[in-house]
Amino acid sequence: LFAGFSRDELRAVAAVADELDVPAGRALTRQGEPGREFVVLVEGEATVEENGKAVATLGRGDFLGEIALLTRSPRTATVTTTAPSRLLVLSDRAFRVLADTVPAFAARTWAATAARMPG
Image (cartoon, rainbow, N blue to C red; front, side):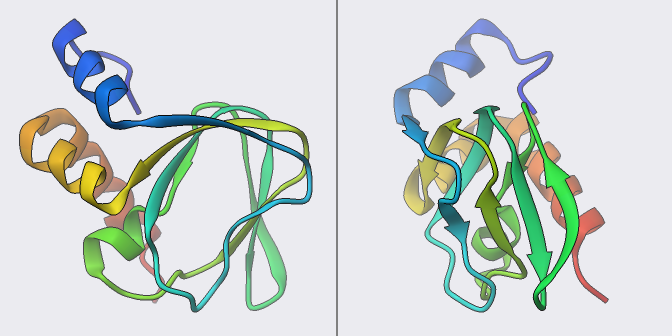
């Protein structure tokens, strides 16, 4: 997600993001619930389930939560860590600030949203 960002763009991300360590088995999102944050897996692994079926595995550098934040719709999947993980977490507000001020961030998250939209 952040590959190719300038030093200033990376500083903007660092200024608004929180870094968290979570254990295996932690639900990061639950399908159908409102979205309140955007998450980047810095280290670790997570599984993505839609309607109770595993559909993907996420690893280092993958991100989630952009669909609910950009479309203001409920979460489209449940994502649960399967290994101890380090996360970069952006609140809804921080996500919107970055989307408004860092063009590369906005472009990449919108592209991911378009690719991941159900239907």
